[in-house]
Image (tube, rainbow, N blue to C red; front, top):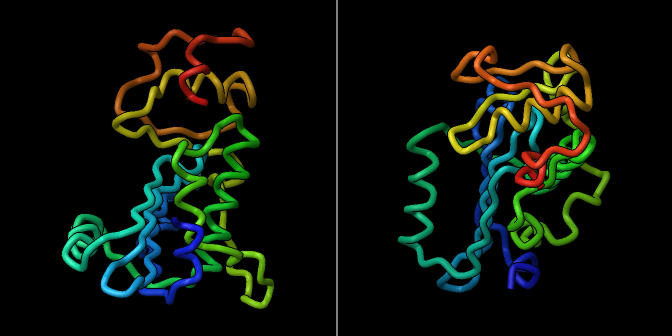
Length: 189
């Protein structure tokens, strides 16, 4: 259904205003389908993990769409962006995360269909997008992340100084896992 929605008129394409500073982007893309709205929402970690969360809603009412927007705009300021820019940012985040061994949210393939062929057009000027921070992956622990497993994966891939990270607890409390095949990594795929 989202593939068909890509042909509908654009209703909104929004991104959080502070995505560069936060190294994290919330993106909402919506298309008008008569009295209903098809929408996809994404949360992309530009520092390390790629698309952490994605959802596709093929048929929202006006009030459901307003509630979706309020849920996100109540937390952060959302500004307009082009679908081409949003698609390029999300694709880049996924590619960067894949280079580190992380996969996007399982709902990402369905949700990204709202873009259709957008993103393959080179006519839009390239606004630079930095993935990571200061030339290295930059992991910021989220409330549902297995931070220890993620950091162990980064340590094995990049070494102890190959990335930056922020967590709510000190790494001295962790057990570092330098083995190639860790059971913790299975949860990250």
